[in-house]
Amino acid sequence: MSGNPMLTETKYGGGRSTLEAEMHQLNLSPEMIRYCQTISRRYQNPIVELRAGVCTGCWMALSTAKRQDIETGDGNDICEHCGRIIFYEEV
Ligand SMILES: [Zn+2]
Image (tube, rainbow, N blue to C red; front, side, top):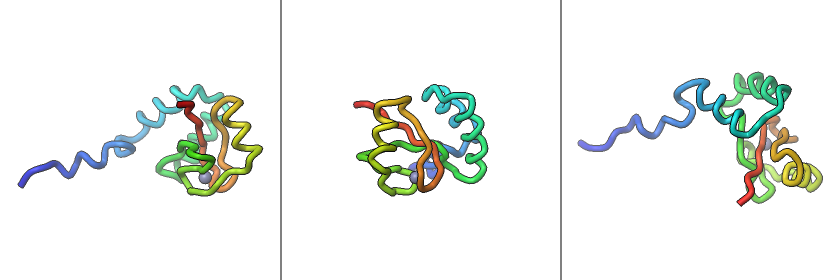
């Protein structure tokens, strides 16, 4: 008997604090924050990462225009498929 099964559930298990920290980190506009709070009732992970042009919330590819918008603009936008907030992190 070893290991702690509770450790796997930390990411969004704690409620709002993680989400708020994330919104802060991404510098979301007030509208985006309001939007995020709305969709957080529907999704467990309302903020997801854009990876290789794909939304990691619904795993659908975004349109080129949308991708460019995110990559060259604010770094965040709303997924046109699932409505989650996607952010792009430069590496
Ligand atoms: Zn999506």
